[in-house]
Image (cartoon, rainbow, N blue to C red; front, side, top):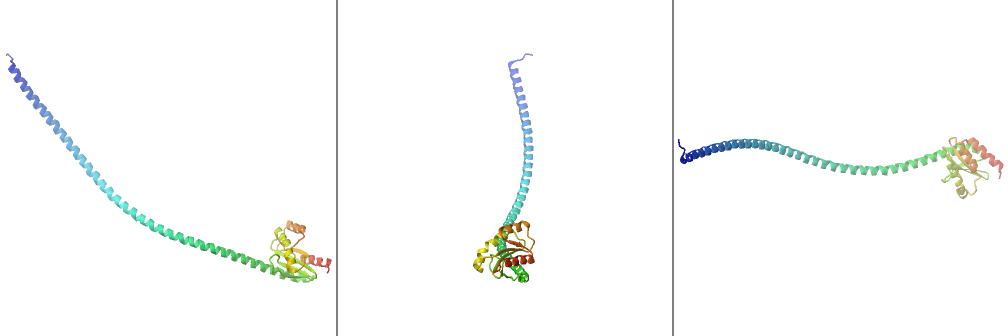
Length: 235
């Protein structure tokens, strides 16, 4: 069979049609498959968007609730802050009042201590009167603060510092009172006495002897010492 150019042309034309149809079918198949995949992706995306939207809505509601609670707590904190400021002011006022009362109490305690000390001194003076009179001596409570009492006899004067447990400072105090005794009683003391209600320490007694001060806690011994001084220096 002889193949002519016309036959070849017809064959090529048929081949082109077949190829065109094949390409069209392949293209349609690919487009169809791509469309299906695209639709699936869009459906999944829409599902995810709906799920996320629902979650966002839930979180928004939760956030609104939390915001409301925060606002309520903020309001409560503001109220408590106001109360705290009021209480702080009251505490400061009470503290100031307590400080004032403390000052008053300390002053009263000091005054009571002074009164108690003066009462104790009066009791000591009263207790010494009897024994001193046996030696011709009289003791009187001092109205002046530099010494607590003074003892007088015929031309004799002794000034006395009275303390519970005497120290060296009490000896120094009675030494400083000499000038006041001269000024108030008109004569220089013949004796300086520190009378201790408790037994004085030996170092205090020795310091008194060194300073020319009699340190004693026995009324009888003190009366004998002063009585002996009067006899040695009769007027």
